[in-house]
Length: 333
Image (cartoon, one colour):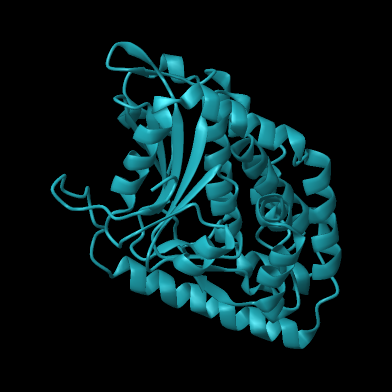
């Protein structure tokens, strides 16, 4: 195990207990008591449960954040999609993944961890990280095997693992200025935690391989035209677009969720599939050369710069006033 990380990954060997949502009187207690990099909030009117990423120190999926996401998921599953809120038991109907960092959804995996593990030839560390990722992504992709619909709201950049996370949801909503892509090919790797599985089920193998191997960053509109993004909405209206989609979906939610289950069961993404891809990814990572590591180091520095810039930025745009006109494209609009 690489120096300084053995203690942390030792914690991953311990079972993580699910959070019993029925025992929680106020969602704010859950936020402060349980999480450091994930901020949940609940809207009881439509049963919308938000998971807002607040990544630290860099806007990437570090192991601590992955553990917190798994605890969040465990809570939903263990409560069977029920949440105690102000003395009432509420149904969770929609779970939305978004980010509190202005201009960034997520810049992807923990590249510093990757580089450290590769330099020290620590295959086990990368395997554990990969399995931690798919422990989050698979139940999210399967809507927790509950009558719940998952939604990703991308406002800004979603790269690498960030794009994988967005793709794991049933519905992907993006603001006009959002940019998404897989830069892994630039350092001679590929996204190994679900990208191929999720994307190929949605748009087919040809488009999937083009997106992954190009190394390009795509606009929300380009990805909408490819069939990857489901709804494109003007900047600043992302949250309003989520609620617009929820209201339409809720009118015939039983039929829509049946269709979502058909889609998942007809071409299922399995744990075995994702685990095998992680193993292939780790084997490939062990073969990267010095020039690839230098490119990875450049991207590590870029993640750090983006973190500094985002932390110095203004606070994210809040709720969109009801008088603002929403001109989203997609989802039947």
